[in-house]
Amino acid sequence: MRNFRLLAALCAAVSLLAAAPARADLNVVTTLPDLAAITKAVGGDHVQVQSLALSSQDPHFVDAKPNLALALNRADLLIAIGLDLEIGWLPTLQQGARNSKILVNNPGFLNASQFPRILEIPQGKVDRSLGDVHPGGNPHYLYDPRQGLAVARGITERLAQLDPKNAADYRANLAKFSDEIEKARAGWEKRLAGMKGAPVIAYHRTTAYLADWLGFQPIAFLEPKPGIPPNPSHVASVLAQGRQRKARMLLIESYYPDTTAKLVASKIPAPIVTVHGGTDFRAGETYIQHIEELVGRLEKALAGKGD
Image (cartoon, rainbow, N blue to C red; front, side):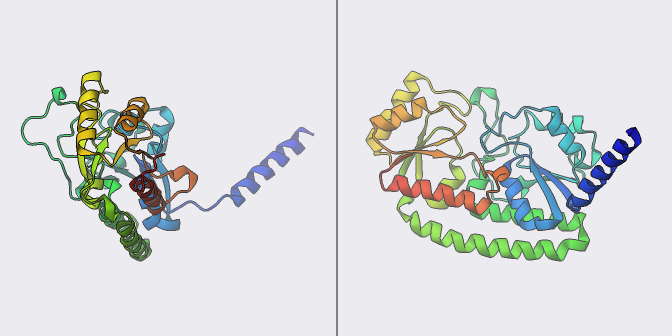
């Protein structure tokens, strides 16, 4: 009887292994879900992709848990946003993963910030007294689909380098992604033409690339310095600016506390737009769908309707 049970268990295990999908050619881990979605778009069936952070998490503060180190241990390629966005947690995971391929300066590590046009590069000395200022520039470049496409091109070339037998497929996927995002962008820009010149308040300095793309004017931030929570005197100043400049909307990422933002928005008054922190990659959302969702929220706010 014991042997029969053992045989049955082995047969069941073999059946499960046989039913499991074939391993992808490359195992890719990204720090953020936007990067994961872009990588999947150009990698297709040849890549297995996992994001370390969720779209609901503040990407500056991700817990360096053992399961994330395990994911990196199995990775052929690690893709990071860079510009010190992940400096508080990624180096710990890289060291703990015991995978030399994904260490900085090795082919299995890709810093995506080399591909877009970086904005808000500080001039002069940067220290903690300035708040959470990134010395290399603003790392929130994937809010702009033009920069997302630039990153997709860079990722494609690294995939082709690591897996040359599938290089043609990666480049074909890039061509398809490029065509889809350019067609979508034309529609997005038409729908949001009213954003040009519009005064906008934001919670954190995540708006640089979005403003560069759509042409609105960030006039104030609820954080007195990046990463520093709002205080009463600063909030009063922002409210005064919002009223004086007739702010059209207030933008805040979903992972920030929104009590102060809602109060300020109600007193201006202006609609509040809650921005999802990134593509909901684990739920199957694509990067293009994520930008479409953001555009829809901005379009609604232009019509005077908030979340």
